[in-house]
Image (tube, rainbow, N blue to C red):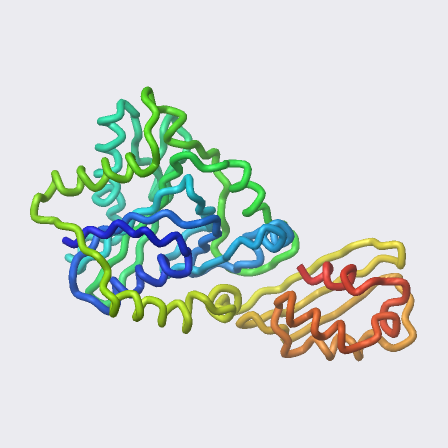
Length: 326
């Protein structure tokens, strides 16, 4: 097994690297990495229904869709992530304990009583500090997990605080369980880098044949290609989810407006707008302008700037109308 200590904090790069190791290589890998602030969503999730869109936009937080299922997680410099990428022995799927045991052992050495619970969580005193997910590709297998070490838990809540009432879909929903940080239970404080070193040491103790591997120039170039064509694109991160319905209602000085959208592959395929607002032109003409437009702020702002807002919504600003779509 090759051990990789990723120094790259770009979430697009690190998620793309997992696919690269999984699908374009035959070696076994164990990877540790720390992402800059970002939201990583499960493959089967609707990105917009998982995030606090206003907070994410204001703070310029990247949203990246991973290969595996499960819920959305917030990554930051206080969150350590680990990945096992191996040739599948056909007894790995749903065997979460096999891959989380080294983490449990490291914490035991730090006098922290951590345990597996439920299907894919690690907890300390009943509070979750690690979520895990898995993905199988032909004869290759990925198990990865998060480790809340010293994260700002307020940021976790603010970033993932979406309004479920606005969305009707069949995506996997995240559950914001009671979470905790590992540092809260350490008798002697250590840094996240020291914690990372302890995990690597545990992996090597389990098998002394494992050794470190530095990414080559070709590795880096190939991973960046995957970022450019997939993980860094709107189509993958936001448009991938097949179909959902979105609705929103707001009252402004100009009146009440209700918006209903049908969205498929991130593209608006149906729209209806109701309310007690006044308009000079029939609002149905505006509804038609939304068809085949991305459910994306930039795309919808382009629609709004292409018309005279007061023709359809008297006494409303462009930003007020835009806010209805998210």
